Image (tube, rainbow, N blue to C red; front, side):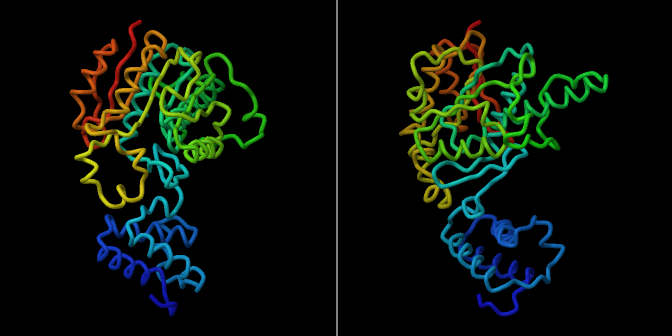
Length: 338
């Protein structure tokens, strides 16, 4: 790659071929994401100006990123953010990259909250929060729905049906603005979310994402491993969510290089059978939850039967495993006795 007369079209063609030769998964998408990142534009804009010339400085930046991508470093880390549940989150090598399969957990939480009496879900916890994408996506969607309800109420129209809309088209209040500072009360109050992680850098990452989405006032952060991050007095949660490490020894050996070599083992590997952390979360859940509360834990597809048996053994009711966007068993769902 030289610095002579490179255009967007030429760079795209070269990058796609080069990354494919290096065995990079989804090489065309990776090339477009890196090009858009360096150019500071949306991916679609690349197709609108295919003959755009690139400067020497841009090419130098792009060259360094392509070299890193060729070593299987995830493109998400190269561009610094990634989409999840209709929002962008800062990502970093200290924790997992958000994945579409985890959105099934968020959707299950929102469906359940929509079925509860208004204002009854007041406290929640995200164990092993990583980027914070689970807790923050739940809060974003609730905030969006409640804003729409207030708009409809002012217009004299009925509220939307049960279920929780997203935050689409609704901007977060600016930090420090009256709307951001004003406490919400009654049925408009969002749950308070505790976000835990054993990695200090992940806690700071989740904190930045909470600030990015204008939700920091609804979050508190704890450093520690699962339930051990909490004080003994912290109990009575209405909702518990978690995407813990659940990859078994056998499955870890089969992971793609961009996962095994770059995402932290502590966020992936769950022991010989993958259930070490899942068991600690499920076993410790009931004493920390109020009656009739909901537990949602992401698991591997191979752990469906074991997860259901574990929940039953811990006295949780109606355990099922929900399927993700690929129709794979993905989320253990259970409730505490009323």
